[in-house]
Length: 489
Ligand code: ADP
Ligand code: MG
Image (cartoon, helix red, strand yellow):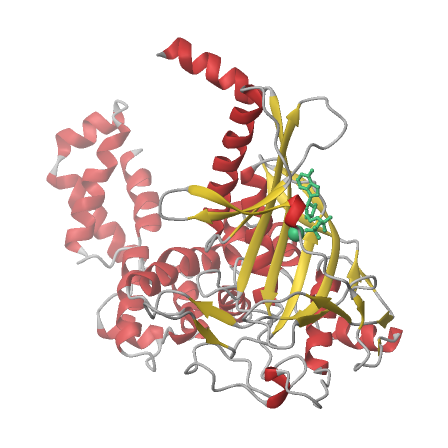
């Protein structure tokens, strides 16, 4: 068995995986790209369908400027060049969900060219180059399941704006593809460009996959795999496709360029079309829309309105606030967490304690209660109050947790008043502490002897007694110091 595994793994290891991704991000604009219909998801079928969406004769499209702004925001965040003069093109094909018989897209002059997405793989940074990002309209949606005799068409989605992000074939494993998509999803959410929901289809990904023997310089034929509804399923579909291709090459056959559809239920895929029946889209310039001009001033204005991005935040948190990579990663992962943290550190300089409270206590609490962080009732300033009380030795870390949970029940109270009411304020009075410490030692003279002979662990026994005597109010750090002093006499 082990031997067989060895042979198998060497066969697969001989091959290098080559992947290029095409990602469609549905923009979260109010209205469609060329019509005033609502662009929102989830309305009753065929309720957002003006004459423009239906492609009725005589109507003209009008470009929605909000689409351009979002496209430029994404392009700037992904280090792209922005094209100053944009043209739309007609991409012609016949399909039931495409009322006009063509999709308005961009061909030769996409809004963004070049650029890259930075991913971390095995603790190393890697840049995945982008080919282009272009603006286009979505098609409607066919449904073959709802009715037994008919296919149903919902045109609400027709004309909803999309950005298509195309990567170079720079991705070398399904893990890299996973990271790439995770990064894109994070960035589109930060930029408020797209809600990034793969399950609802507002972020979609087609994976182009090929393999070649390590050291080969030319790429081999690729297969495009479609219809994955989560980032995990993209990774899974790639792994399955890689194995399928290697098995075919190893059997002596070759791979033809084709498009396949992935079945999430059983992990198989089936061919949709081969190269021979590939579409000829007969692209030509869209005559009904004037060119869209982007000036340097437009770009500058958009640059000024850009939020801090995860990468910049990560660098700031690690370099300026000296947080660990782990903390910085979690704190820069989504906008809500970032904004809570940024607000919190306006009120405390203890960046590490702030990170701990947010990551451990607050995030656990909201996760457990299935709440968004934005609806968490305790304001950052109250957490800063708790941190200050701990830093001043006024409450213990256990006391702090009690204050935290009390604040959740009465978020308007102050941390100090809760600490007072619950008798959590620690005694910092040296004399009182010394008294308790002396009493503790007197209760167990033989343990004190052992301590003096080297059994340092006995300190905890005395600490326990002091805590009992003080009803938990003794400050542990100070008590330790006093006990050590007394025991060394
Ligand atoms: P199309 O428009 O027909 O889909 P493109 O040339 O735009 O073709 O390529 C689409 C995607 O396929 C890009 O992401 C590109 O990086 C990727 N790609 C191209 N060749 C290969 C290959 N041999 N193996 C894997 N991916 C590839
Ligand atoms: Mg393609």
